[in-house]
Amino acid sequence: MAVPYGGCTEPSNVKAGGSSCPIRFQCAGCGFYRPDPSYLSAIEQHTNEPRADRKTAQAMDAAEFVITALTAQITAFEQVTDRMRRSLALLPAAERAEIEEASAVLRRARAGVCRRWLPGAADGSSVQPNACRACCGPRVPRTRAPHARWVHL
Image (tube, rainbow, N blue to C red; front, side):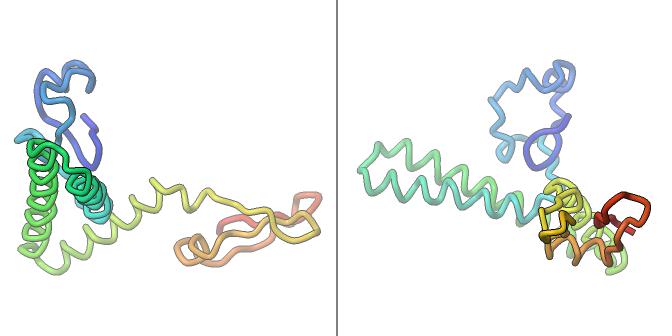
């Protein structure tokens, strides 16, 4: 069952199609959580949110249980990323490279980079953003259309 940043194998949640999480999607602290290495950078970025929340809570002189809960959440996500990095480091270089390449493809697909087209020149043509040129390669005008549009090769 897909959950943020990975998958869930908790039987009642899987059976319910993801709508029956017994711990309300606190995935990083759950033994049924299966993080996906393609989300590694997203998990690391996500960890910054509870860090900022913790600083805000400390500045507001919030109750200790609030700060403790945020610290535990940060620790859980750090353990997830550390475990993934250690597991990836143990793989042979070729397998690690394949996983890193597949992860990059998945991140681009989730971001929709290859599907984004920007309005371009005054003639009505469209232009790929730089990120898309970097991942998709060259672009060529479509010659059969009444007016040229950029298409992927």
